[in-house]
Length: 499
RNA sequence: GGCGCAUUGGUGUAGUCGGCUAACACGCUGCCCUCUCAAGGCAGAGAUCACGGGUUCGAGUCCCGUAUGCGCUACCA
Image 1: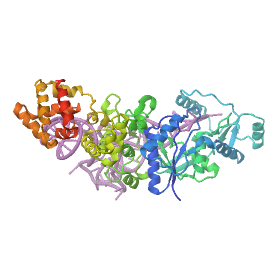
Image 2 (image 1 turned 30 degrees about the vertical axis):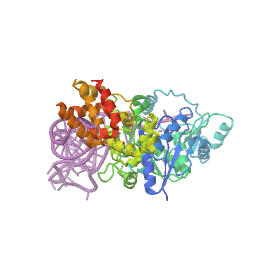
Image 3 (image 1 turned 180 degrees about the horizontal axis):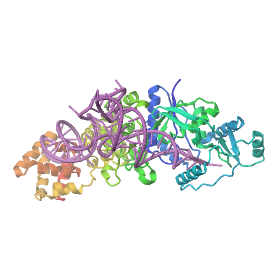
């Protein structure tokens, strides 16, 4: 039997990293087993679902490189009629019943508290889950009242005795007593719309899903879903639940509290290389059998296994206070690692996109200046963290309009007043060099520093800030060659004004 | 409240059948390289494996209990 898995996000917000990881694991599993990877949009909550959210999710999956769905995208809302029919079929088969109890309004704010209170109260009164008086209403009577237009909800008839059990691929054997599961509502009263547990099951059956891979927050509810599979007479798929990704204080990651760090598109917008973030994501809750953490997509597919997923929740370690740690340090490190080691040919288009977005791209980079571009990028990528750095710290390589870092100016230019005269002098001796390259500019600078009686380091560091605006960067003589004779001389003279 | 799941250095993880002087990566500290560095090289600090008890010659690994965290418990998804 070929494997069929699906990623089933609900479009009620952006694609957060936990969901993205679920998508990734589904995708990896499908690609490894030669199975099908499907996308189903769970848009049954019309109030909360938005097109914008859907677009953001789709874009996120594309960015991660896992949007090659093997079949048409399924929209759950389009299947509502099927879900309803399935529930009514269960009523006919006496596996579910109509509940004519008037719908109780629920305040959305304190649901968790309300549930706990109700449970506590129920426990005190010894209430049991099978006490609904409509549970044993005859089908004739039920049909009659429904036919007369009386509003009803449909609930599943859960057996009084026994227990539900299944083997989770990640969490192992799971068991739950029926007495702990109430007769869950399948269809809402009033508009008779289907509820989540019914919809997932009917759709998963319809889509022929063989493995349900999703967040651990669904682990306990799986028992309810299995009950629905059974009632419907359908085979139950295999389940694999994934540990959750938590915030540094071990709280659930949420948009409201944690903002954009949890949104996948943030990583795209802040200069992450998709492969790097994907690689990082794969390591949250899973580890390859060997110690190799940096993996190509092919290696990841080959090494992945659901059995290798572990059970404890992972913490996404970031700091809201420190800008340098705006997201997990390992994610940042991995991005830098990818930027400095990936094939230049793969990096180039990403840098181009960044330069274009910032108005720094020039047509000649595609033609005459192509070798220069490649050399430059290869040189400066060594100490960059994100693609944004190419247009930020690296701006001076692509434009004459760049800013001088205050700290760099203070450290390398302002602290030695003689630089006011030395810099123009250096500019002159640099200009006289022929040919102009790293070696000759070094010779010129060292000769000049000797004749001026200052240490070469003084001029080298001053030059770095003069030519790039930065305090750090590649070897200075490489920079001279890259920036070129004329621009170098001009910037050295201009920097004299900053001393 | 009930039920379920988890718990290895700051973080991500390894540790299959009990033999660990607890491994790797990020981060951190120091040194080296050097013209700088958020790069590279080297070294180091950091974990009584949540706690308590038990089984055993021997437990991070097995059993029981406790604590903490998380999840579910809804006519939300």
